[in-house]
Amino acid sequence: MDSKGNVQYGIHLLDTICRGLQATLDVDKIVHIILTGLTAGASLGFSRAALFFISESGLLHNGKGIGPFDNEEAKTIWADLANSSVSLEQMFENSHRQTLESQRFAVEIKSITYEIARLPHNSPLKKAIFNNEIVVLHEQERFLVPEEFHWFVQHSTQVVVAPINISGKVSAIIFADNAFHYKRMTQETFYFLSIILNQAGLALSNAIAYGNIRHNLEQLRLLNEKLRAMQEDLLACERFAAAGRISTYLAHEIRNPLATIGGFARQILEICKGKNIDVRISRNAKIIVNEVRRLELVLNNLLRFSFKQPAKKEPIHLKKFLEELLEVLSINIQDSGINLSIEIPDQMNVFADRVQLSEVFYNLIHNSLESMKPGGLLTIKASESDSEVRIEISDTGYGIPEDVLKQLFNPFFTTKSHGIGLGLHLVKTIVEENHNGKIDLISQVDVGTRVTIKIPKKEAHGKENSPDRR
Amino acid sequence: MAKRILLIEDEANQRILYTETLEKEGYEVNPVSNGEDGLKLLEKKDVDLVIIDIRMPKMSGLETLSHILGQRKNLPVIIYTSYPQYKQDFMSWAADAYIVKSSTGLDELISKVKELIGV
Image 1: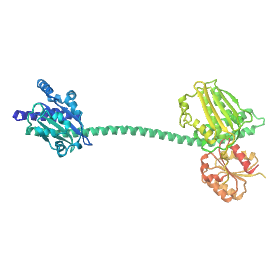
Image 2: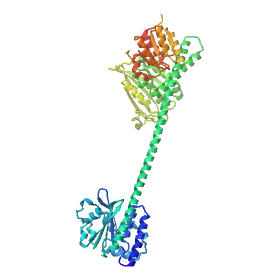
Image 3: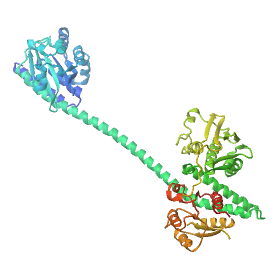
Image 4: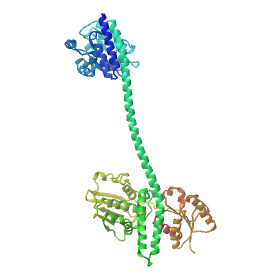
């Protein structure tokens, strides 16, 4: 820049670069503008420029470079530039950047990473990075840069190593040289370079801050989304819990009057017994008794009421017990158009808790009824050995697929739209935990399901559950 | 002479039901609707057994129970309630039986009464 015209061009160049830097918040584009600006035309005198970022861990990396790799390329590039009518502004654009990125010099620069800690004590790079100074390496000094950089400094007679200050810290470093044309750099060159680097530092710190803000905003948006989803979940949970509390409250409130209704209906039955009164009275009372029992079974199931208590075991006449239960459920059975087959020996007793055993049968019979089409067959069989009573409940329903089978007894597992998934869990708990029994279930899709319950006749060391006084 | 039962139950309909059912079994039933009345009655009258509800206004069944047993520590008591959870309350362990109300619970109640004091 030794003539007035060159200085004017330099100022124009500087102006264009500064405008370009101000117009973007894209880090890659800023780097491209800096490198293009430094190597554009002959005004600054740099034939090649490279920029490396300095990572938090002290690594020179992420290098970008513009310029010819060797003499041949230099000639071609400069000839092309002389013939082209592309303006500097156009060269700043991303499309131009992408073409340059594939050039050999750019590719070589990109491949370099270097640990700052490895720099020798008197390294000019150290001076640039730690003293925040522009360092010019003349002729022989240029090989004071680490070996990794020798391949490109060997083509020049002067190399500038200059720091870029981003938010008060040297966070990038620039190499620029006079390769292939060997024009000497002037004092003005360094003034201009210094101005460009200041602008570059500002532009980069803005861009990085913007990037951080954008990143944080994105994080915030994601967090917000998560929060909203969690809020919705929480609300759903609260609704569920509220529904649970309401149903528990209702169930308890209903149990009392039900017990009264059922009790009085039984009294009516008693009064009618053996007397010559209109038969409809006793029939209707019987219906009330059964319907109340049915409601009580539903409520017990809803409250998971019976299995919270230890089993109050007593010998239960199985046939009579089941007949009574089936009578209570007769409305359900009639409605579903299912045929019943009961094969239970007359004198068989099972040692169990009456309420809990009703829950077991209620749930299993209910499931079977729901799985069958009209005309289906529900079979209940019982047999006994010396040690246990074995009861089988089988249906000709649609069966249970294998993947469902595995989860069947898990609490809250359900395939029904109207269930809460506690029925079979309750059954298993009652049979296996409260009665030391065993429950097995085999099922075949479209054929049916068979549940086998085994209940020990007398427990080896189970405790009886009539509360003892004090 | 018929065995005497003190029935403490706050709900009128249930009181009627239990009274009638027990009377039919040959017992003399003295129904009252709260714990205080029950304790007053105990002071005047000798009874053989107490049937008591737990959830009642004013004095709860468990509190009443502790007063009763304070006066007559060998008096048989049956808790008859809709709520199974009080079984966890150690106060309820003082009773001779804990029966949960249901439409068929009365059968259980009667057989327990028979077991404790006979007919």
